[in-house]
Image 1 (cartoon, rainbow, N blue to C red):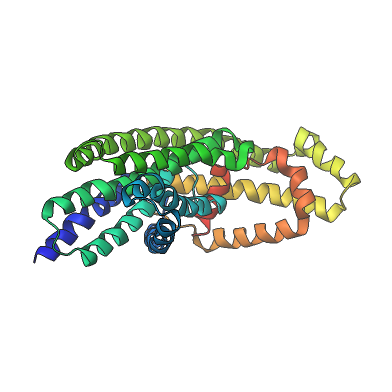
Image 2 (spheres, helix red, strand yellow):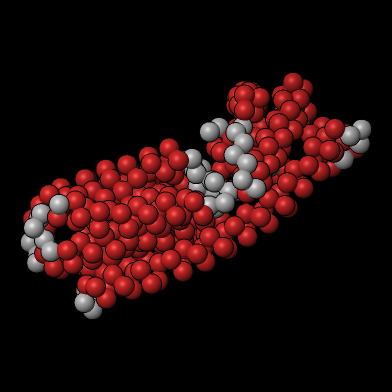
Length: 335
């Protein structure tokens, strides 16, 4: 009976907060299977951290307390950060909201394994320890990775040309949070209370600002896409700046390739509008799915990419918004 209570105290808090974050996401940016998959990846990261930490402890030959404060935070946050970086590289993260959810999910998966491991290794630990582990340590793991994801996503959007350097500030913050928590400058229960008091308001601010940003992006981007499609369909397209630019490309590209470039531009904008329309519906509570027609258009878009080639796509770049948000919306349509 005691083991069941300890397991609930150790696992439920972080799981419930993650569920609350998913529920509060009014745009439903993340499919549930991806949330569960990321939790599983966090679980695997925790499994990998165990032999790495054991080897590091043997190699460095330092006190376990020093190791847990200054070395373990680097290895553990590094493993968790790799998962977030993988999601970013594959355009699975478009906004601060999904960065927060994915980051917290990674930390939750890590904490679930860690607490299950400690439950098996020390089943007779007192209830107070599990309150600290469930409401403190587990929340810290989720918070540290969520903050890394939020800071990195914000910097990637603001400074897209800085590349991997955008990951450094968030990683330093995550390591610092982890290390400070492990120092226990105050009593463990006070540490836990600090996490519980500071984390929800921080995430609430992130959600509020991010949803405002999504709303603004939807309005401006939707109008711009609609205007371009209207221009392409109008009789004035050939005399427009875009039309004349495409005509000038016939010097460098064959006629059929230029036609494919125009088709790609139009299809790209139509799909972008479809993605934004889905987000608007989700905000109102309608969980519409992309449908077979949209998936067929995505396949056509892939064909046009291979037909145009990288040089042709580069020539179209001035008319295609390729920010992380814009790339993310095509991933959303494929699910």
